[in-house]
Length: 103
Image 1 (cartoon, rainbow, N blue to C red):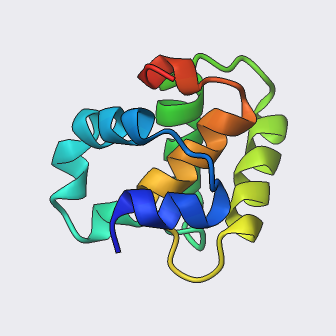
Image 2 (spheres, rainbow, N blue to C red; image 1 turned 135 degrees about the vertical axis):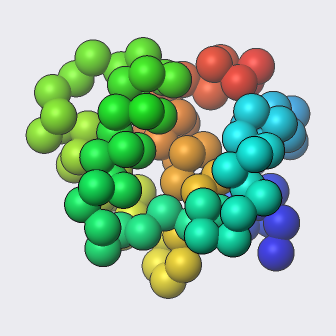
Image 3 (spheres, helix red, strand yellow; image 1 turned 180 degrees about the horizontal axis):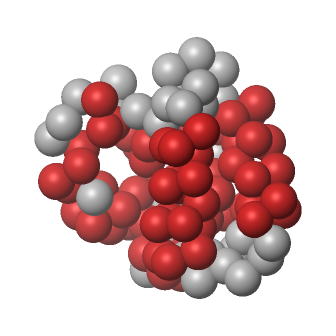
């Protein structure tokens, strides 16, 4: 299943252009099968999502606890294997930051 198809299961009106830009931005990570998924059982992985994506890429300045809660909420929305692009798209949408990717 493509990233766009997966994202549209949770965000039916997702922007094709934003998803394409996200895929371009994270193309290197998407070449690695393990990196395509966010491991919600790994605290270090979730900390990387918080620090590298939410804080650094999106520019969110909320507290770590608040960001961790948003990451957990997205995880609850997406059952089973969590594709990185789906998690990232939903987090960007949650924070109103799709514009970072042209949306």
